[in-house]
Image 1: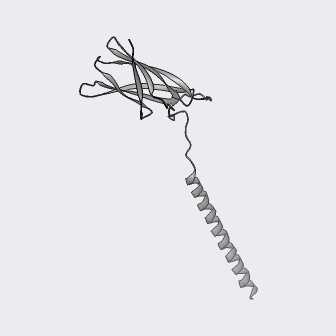
Image 2 (image 1 turned 180 degrees about the horizontal axis):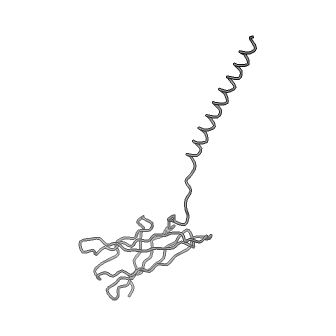
Image 3 (image 1 turned 135 degrees about the vertical axis):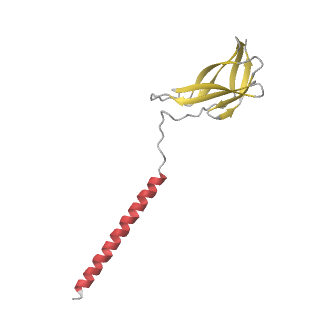
Length: 147
């Protein structure tokens, strides 16, 4: 008679151990999942420019518009530059040049490279370039006045 309860007790402890191990395994798997780095879609990710020196910008005024041209160094040779301008000041006389770099839809490998940009901004002659922003961050710039 005594053998039946001992066997039943062994089976009970074995089931408890299996349940505890299964629970531990589930907890560990969920915890590891939470620690995983999220995947990035590189086709739409914004890549940071690696511009270290001030952006050199040539400025010319003709036909009631400023033409700003220069180049920035980017980390991917397939990066695309999108440029825009924003105005501020009492008479909208301050110009902020905005440059965004995005990766092209193609696979591309290579070293950092310079990308040229040209922006034509219709504005009164008394306006002036006040700041330059690359991927949301202000960067130093050197302005060269052209003709």
